[in-house]
Image (cartoon, rainbow, N blue to C red; front, side, top):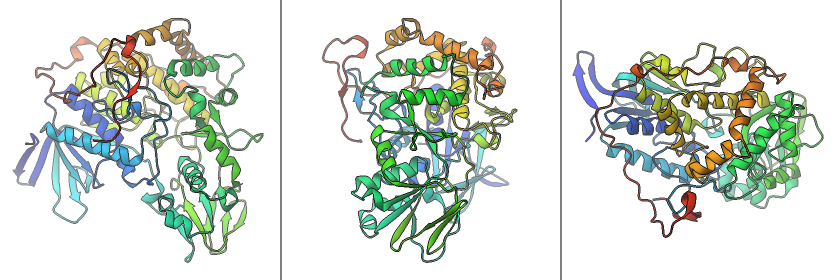
Length: 549
């Protein structure tokens, strides 16, 4: 039975809980998961306009997969990856990329855990607006009261199926979001294809068509702006493990004296196959949004005809009109929309990036704004850290002192801080956040035990392996500190102000730490596979799960 209170007064019926969380995507679910674990008495009302949990995954194309390995995606309490060691810990498996369907099943299991606590009430297919949840089917609205805080997910992540394309399309033109390519009949019924968009969705559409047997000369790819991509098998040459070696390659490049800008850094990374771009020999891209692909996909992208004439302004029955030219549209040709709406070129990520003014705060009076990433491209662990801070400290000033994210005039859209420079800002902010967490031992311990943290030792051989990589011959800890100093000293020409993050970490006062009287009651105890023999640092990898429960 739910412990969320139901009350009535002169203003009508209301539901009351400690927290109202608006948004059942990755951030909202990860926040609730950690809150339940760290605050044994917390109650939550979860509201989402979708019919089920999963955020943008609920409308994503059927052949979608994670960009990056499954081992640290989702929530802390429940494993998503299937490659485990003998202790049941997930391991970095480079090519283990969960499908969208698997992720939705995973989040269904997460919700089951939430509901079993009796502390979470879910309102799906409801629109939230200033304390009121209104069902989308037109039923009676419900007043929601948060006795502590309303948690809002500032994600503007958009997939093409969420709305029309950002350009007019004439009647009679066959246009569809890339979801349509999940139907083999749709592919078979068209003679050729025009894929619009150079982000991860556009890459997936082009590669999916080629994987389905469509000849490269039947695919036209409209690329308004060339972008950098992470190359997955270049970042991690080994199929399993190799995280610390990969990190060493990254940070060693950042410390080279010849690297004087973020643009220089990406060119250096390109030599090591850590990042890549489609056109070779052309001017280096200025856009990078974190999309991750394989080397084989890069080869596929180079095999199709790319049109680089700017953005589409209109699609008529006979041609595609772009900012710098026109392309004929053949009969029985399918235009595949892979755009992210009317976005400004170079926006790096869809988590509140357009609102990060200098005075932006995650923790506010009666409110938490989940949005800015304090760990690079990782909304899962970002939300978990925010929930941990909320459950641990009394005052918002202390909580905010731990959270570093790029902000200010040089970060807002249109400021010129995009692509490689913006990524450098995210990397800098992550390291500053980790340095802040280190000032309070239990907080750093929480991060190291979070399965959603990329650095969690359980994924990479245990604490001894982490210590050896940090303080042994690799000296990763020293390299991270030297990178931070380079940014602070202005050594990168396109990084002039430390992204608004010049402040130093502030050690919390003991008096600000919340006292907890109830014993922890979440998550439910997991059933790890038995260890058959002694194994140092977690033992050899093995697959202990082959399907979703």
